[in-house]
Image 1 (cartoon, rainbow, N blue to C red):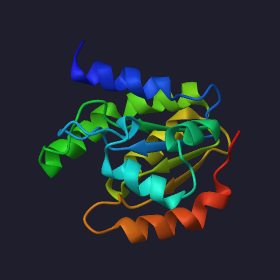
Image 2: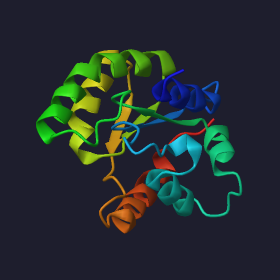
Image 3: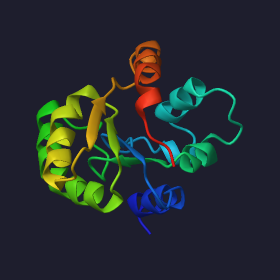
Image 4: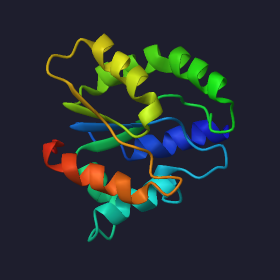
Length: 159
């Protein structure tokens, strides 16, 4: 089984039966860390934003929240142009996944993917599906990420 297959198997262990809020990252990092392995910066920042949960991933899932990625292969080692090309290439796949998940809200977790994720949201045709975008909590953006997340968290549906 490839590393990508292992990550997707792990991701789907935490997929709630009903997805109320879908978070969308760019891709799993090339270095091997992963949100659902509880060893990625995104995991640590989101967990700290929701202090008090011993088992953060279980609590995340219990809320009906799920994290998927726009691109299902690592892209953070690619040039900006190649990343944009891969974003466009994977957009129809994301649209199909969103349509299957049927969330009420989608949250992009990187401002540079906001437009492509927005196109995927529009392509689903799901009436009333809202879309937000947050900055990725890297490069000293953790406080900004937490502040923006705190601003919208009351609007994120749970199950």
